Every structure is written in C-alpha cells, then in structure tokens.
Length: 243
Image (cartoon, rainbow, N blue to C red; front, side, top):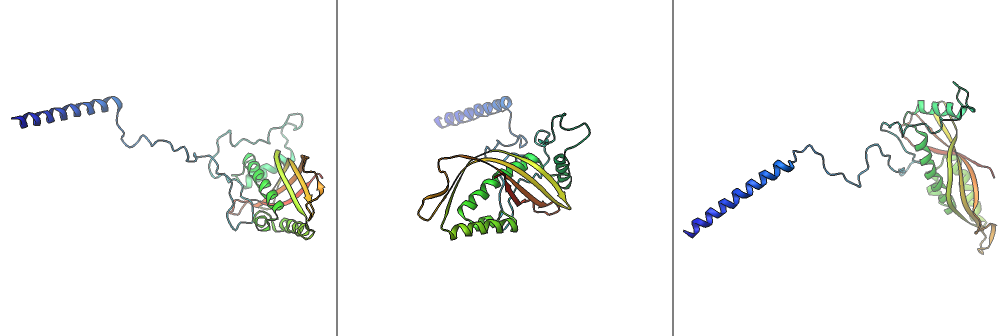
C-alpha cells in the first residue's frame, strides 16, 4: 500500500513539474535556432579593418586593404574639403586630382586608412633603421631606398658609432601629394614627429645630438604600388626631410 502512495506522489510531482515548464515557456518563449548567438566580445566586427600586418617575404609595408563596402562616414574624403576661397567652384587642386586618379585605379583606396597604415610604417622603419636591422628593412623598403639605408648603417657600424633614436610621438601625418604614372600609384605623406636623436662613439660619448632634447622633425615619405597587382601592399620608394 505504501508503495502505491509513493508511486502516486511521483506521478503528481511529475505533472506539477511539466505544468511549470509549460508555463515558463509560454511566458519567456523558447529558442528556435534563429535568434543568433550571444556576441563574442573578441570577434572583429564586420567592416572593422584588421590591424595592418606584414606577410613574410613581402618587400613592402602592408597598408590596410579595404575589401568591404564603406559606410558614408568611413569613406568620406578627408582631403577633398577645402575652403572655398582656396578652391574655385568647379575646380580641383592637384592633390584632389591625384587622389581621384588613385581612387579610380584602386576603388578600395581611402585616405584615412592609408594614413593610418603609413603612421605604422613610419615607426616600424625608423625603429629598424636605428637597430641596424637590415633584414627587417629589406622587407619594408623598395630596393633603391633599402640600398641607401643599408649603406648608411654600414658606415655607422664601420665608424663604431651607435645611433640612439627615440620616437616620442607623431604629431601629424597628412597626404600632400598623389599621382598616377601608368598603373602605378604614388602617395606622399608629410610626417611631423618629435624625436630624441643621439649618436655616440665607441667610448659611449655623445658626438652628435642631445639625449635631453626633444626635436621636431618633418619628413616626407612617398609610398607606391602597382594598382593592377593582387598584392595590396605599398612600398616606401622615397624619403626627404626639411633638415
């Protein structure tokens, strides 16, 4: 008899549990496989560019490649807007014309993304030059520019000198020239940076520069790439400075 009551209790509890489950599902709803999972906070969102990278074996600096459609804010031409007093109605400056030609040849090109990549390239190349890392430089520069950098490093090492260069920060970076020559695009960026530069002799004595002085330096670097190439990378092909 006791076993009969226990069995009845089990059935009763099961019915109560089933009722509660049905009640909860009617209130909260249930997942049918179409709601989408919870967002992964570490997953890169569509449309967000990946951090510029460099593939081993490339002889150029990897700059962002825009392979996805841009929204209006991201795709706005940050250099197209100029004061009306400087640009007559219906006319374009040489820079605007050059940028338009580059965009026509390479629709994925945007000025803002290019400048962001150029800033990264500037720091990478400067650090490699100071360290005398010719293997690294060879992957970042055009053959002609690499030859010049390599010669300067050899002369420095031959003299027993040590270069200490600290990039305090890049104050500004802006495109100042752009043009197309055949299918090759060239874009020049003006960098204004703060640096601490010191050259020491074999004994460690300072022979040039001041380790306590921060100097503002203005450089002009020109990057180039074949717009018909499947390789989206840009090479540093020329450098000059105001000094």
